[in-house]
Image (cartoon, rainbow, N blue to C red; front, side, top):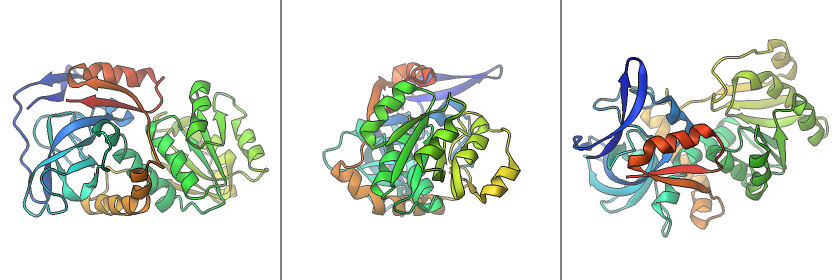
Length: 327
């Protein structure tokens, strides 16, 4: 089997495409999927040597955590899909010709959808439905701000918020070019976070109230500004730490605003918890994906042999939409 592996030499990690790796064998409740396409996510840039939802993964360190492909075999008890079904999911070791995944952690690929398109959805669907609907408790008529809106996850989040009846959807980014293109996905207004006064602009756009829900994919230096932009009794859901894992936190402002600050990650969730997220998300917004009402753009497609170029493209941080890798 060919796969993109993560190799460490003298403390430095790099990607290396290798042949003749042993094929994974589906265990209890697992599907063996022949990968047709893999989605690259910002979390992949950290290139963890061992990471599968917070547990150690055995075998070679294969990169990737998102895929779309065709079921090739089923392990004992994996009865939710049949051999030959097309599926997409969020798993581990996906930049490879084959991957094994819990049968409860995958979605069906809608009829007629290309696998290169399908692989853009799983991470965004699970992350944003959990952040907006479950933890963010968005109600119709409320306002939402996405910090880091230009990512694939952010783009889908904007659309989900609109579909759920948000009265005002704001997207924040350091790139004015990205902001200019997000209106096509339902964003009502863009917030340039390079302007130190951006929280004042958010309050102005919300009639002085502040925004009801913030979905923060940046963290670090954005938290205090985010709390300034939030409404009293607003919610901030932290789903990513692209700007850093630590930063200043104004505890008095947090108390004055009486904010719910909620941290989420998939790394400490059990397989059963992830399965619940998958079921709830697909039952709620799967029909909108199948109909095309919710969509994600593909920025570029790279062959597996050029996986390092795909990572470099993501590091340049000029893309809009998903970067896809095909075996």
